[in-house]
Image 1 (spheres, rainbow, N blue to C red):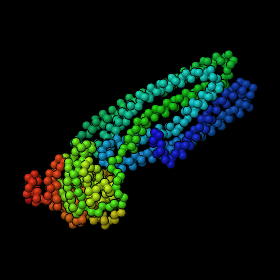
Image 2 (cartoon, one colour; image 1 turned 30 degrees about the horizontal axis):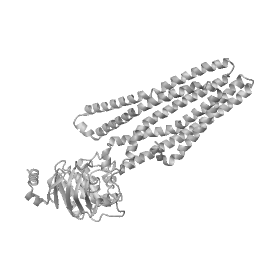
Image 3 (cartoon, rainbow, N blue to C red; image 1 turned 180 degrees about the vertical axis):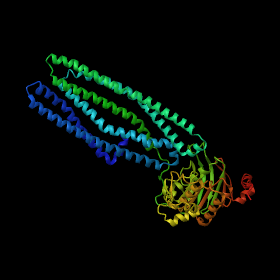
Image 4 (cartoon, helix red, strand yellow; image 1 turned 30 degrees about the vertical axis):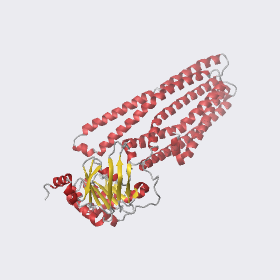
Length: 575
């Protein structure tokens, strides 16, 4: 928790004011029983009479109101500090995730990151607020009440001095066994979130295959597992309260028993006994508060560990070694003895000794079967991953020499999975260029063959898209993503199977428009259809992470039987 305290930031002043207010509140609460003892022994039993009783009573009321006011102020200060702390912590987590490379992102599941940003931060926020209030209040009251009780009657104080180590031992046993149970519970939260996320993303598939009942059953299993984990953790923690109450009541009974004997013997006053009981109650309530703080810290400890895993994750792709101000001069690309492994293991390579040279302005097609590492190859160009061995050069310079932002602004990539965001079509297009005007957007959409279908909507470019573009077809999504990439005016444009959902006529129109408008842009097209790359300057055939062959269409038709067979099989029946 100490590591995370830095995220209190500008709210640290509230985090300091809360304990100060609590200190004043506790001092007043500890003094009230002393006034009550004097009121009973001197005002009611003694010769002080009504005037003395009223003075003491009014002083007690004033102190109680002041204590209430300080408590309310402490509550507000702690709430402001806690909520501000949680806001800053969530922002730090989100900022860290935004800096993740693909490799870092692969380490954490999406559901797990969501849980850490929500449930775990909430747990830590509650612990932070409770620490500000109870972790200050409980020790102060415990010490203050113990000192006052000892001053009232030291011999009678042995009752709670015996109870303290018993309570501490029981609390320690509960806490040490509760932590691993809460860790298991939070992992179940991850599982439940993953199930919900997967189901909502694939809801159309679920309904198409009439699998609602099956998904309900799977969700019920996850919910049941989470409930069992919660019960397993909580049933140990809830033992704390009854144990505390039993010991507290036992202490009060013993104090009444021995205190009554002292009063009968004439060595103790009724008011002193009343104040002593109040101090015993304050001591035991303080212990209960301490135990609550520890319980919350046990739960938050598991959450803190999960949050720190994200915050302390070492980002493997950084600007370290980059040359500030270095710009990408052209779109030439060269792979020199490039090998790559997702696990960073030289024995488990996805790409093996790739050598490839692409001139600036060329159009390159990449073909290969599933798992041939086509997407892996192009993801090395904008440094979505870093090579395991060898190097990748863009514009004649190693990609690691460019600042990441500079490199990625020069490389536009349309991924296999078309991702659009909530908002209008115009908002989504401006991801490519925030300053793009209407004419620039329309030109990009015409090149991507998207302009006509956009105008078919009543609101045109101001049409609101649902989450992920759910109100668009797959081909429409692909064309919008291509238009968004074109607005970047990149040196290198990578299309990773990004016309698979459009018809052949539209595919051909997009390629024709590229030839007319992107003559200076290096274009790399990963495709399943040979027709999409037949006109490319260079066609690369990949197999099991290696380049099997390369050349233009005519060269490959002459010498490569696999390519020839692929062309014939796809053109069969085509006039």
